[in-house]
Image (cartoon, rainbow, N blue to C red):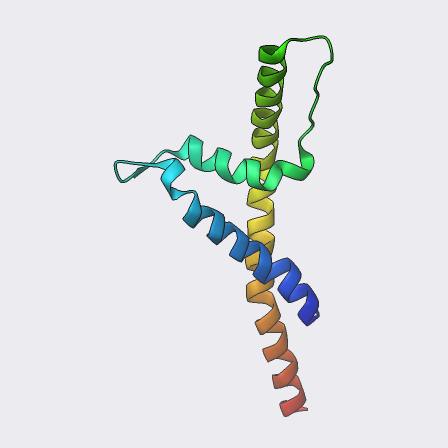
Length: 112
């Protein structure tokens, strides 16, 4: 595990999730309560953007095109929920594993 992997796969994704959670709190917090569907969709859209499919048909009017784009964003958000969970868990594993690996290697050098 290298420092580059630690930063790119551990620190940056976790910090991005924290930033999106902090900035998006006005979206999923209502009267001090978390609305879990909005919370999941916020992180799902954030993590599912690369996995979204965007189909803009050429033979629909403006309302149909806007509805199709909204449907694609919702489907991409639903696809992104497990992706977001997976990315967050992997980020936490990197945040815990890198210092533990460094500590293990340091202790191994000191003992042997």
